[in-house]
Length: 175
Image 1 (spheres, one colour):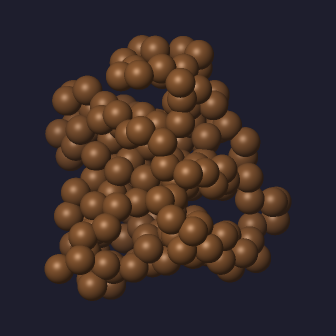
Image 2 (cartoon, one colour):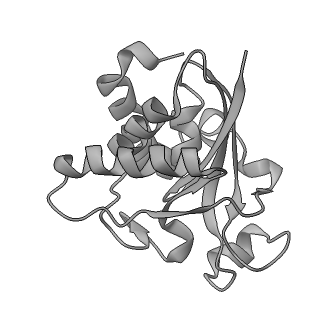
């Protein structure tokens, strides 16, 4: 098994984590923060928009079972990469679309994936592509949020449709 990591953000980390937790080949999906200046930020600090951090998910995956490109195909399907610093009603730099890379090879794969996905969207993809900064795991109550709170309003109205979109478009990738 060759374990690799991918850190990305597509709005609220609960949505992204809920989808990738159900992907075949994903070993772990951890909600957290990255891309800002403050060390060890809290949820409240990140939500203020003043830290520069984005809500992200660190995905550990077995690249013998799923590739980075396949993970990115899912990413383009479950969020809108054409809206700057927003996903639906979640607005602010903390909700930006972002993909972090660790090597030039990963950066090239990400840029190739953006080029491939561009034809699916009417507007230009504005996803930030940057070197991986320090990743800070979110507080324990944010982990597995959808699985633990499926009947909570935000989960039913926002997260469940994204999970369903994944299931509908990628049935062969369902864990």
